[in-house]
Image 1: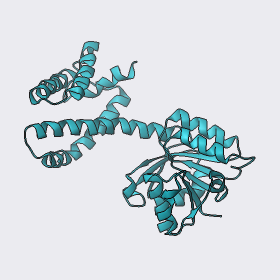
Image 2 (image 1 turned 135 degrees about the vertical axis):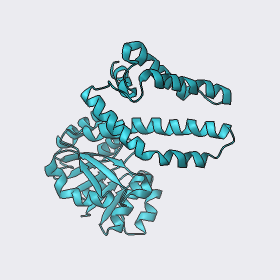
Image 3 (image 1 turned 90 degrees about the horizontal axis):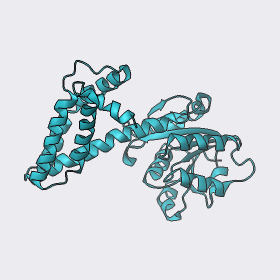
Length: 289
C-alpha cells in the first residue's frame, strides 16, 4: 500500500505528487494520459494502469482533475462493491459548493470518508511556505491525514464541517482576483497606450498593497455590520471617477469593457439611493438579484 494515491497529473496534480515524493512518501499516480507519469516514475512514483488500481493502492486518495464531472467519470470507472470502504478521498479539484455536497454523499454512501479542499498557490509553490489549502469536512477525518496535506501546503486551514465552505471561500476569492487581473490589465493597457513602462506600473501597484489589505478588512467588517455611513469616499464620487475611465479608454483607443461594467454597477447603486454611502455599498445591488 502506498502512503497516498494522486489521481490527476495536470500541472497542479503533478506538483502535488512531486512534493509528496520529495518528502519521501510512497505515492501511486494515475492519469488518463499516461505520458505525464514518466518524470514522476523516475523519482519513485508507482504508476497505476487504471483508476481502480489507483483507488486500491492507498487509503488516502488525493484527486486533482479538471472538474467534478471528470472526477465522477474516473470514480465510476473505478467503482466496485465497497471500493471506498475505509478510504479518505480528498477532492482538490475546482468546483462549486453544490458539487462538493453531492460528491460527499456519493463517497459516504460507498463507505468512504470525504474532505473537500481548495488550493491557494501556483503549482511551483506547492510544498513551499507560500502554499495554502483550505479544507472542509469532519475534523475526525482530517486529523489523521493532516500531516500529508501539510507536506503540500504548510498553511492548512480547516474551515468547518460544512463540506461546501472550502469552495465558497475559493470562489469568493476568485471573484476578487478576477477583478484584480482585469483591472491590472486595463491599467497596463493605459500605460502601454501612452508609451510608458508597464513593469513600472506593476511596481507602483505592489507598493500600494498594505493599503489594499486595510481596505479589504474594512470592507468585510462594514458589509458584515451593514455599516456604510461616514465614508472616506462615496458611491457617487467613485462612480464619477470610474465613468472618467470610460472616456480615457475611448481617448486611448483601448477597450472600455471593464470600466463600462464597473461604471454601470456604481450607477445602479447611486440610482438605488446609496450614492452617499461608501464604495463597498455596491454589495447591496450585487446581493439583490
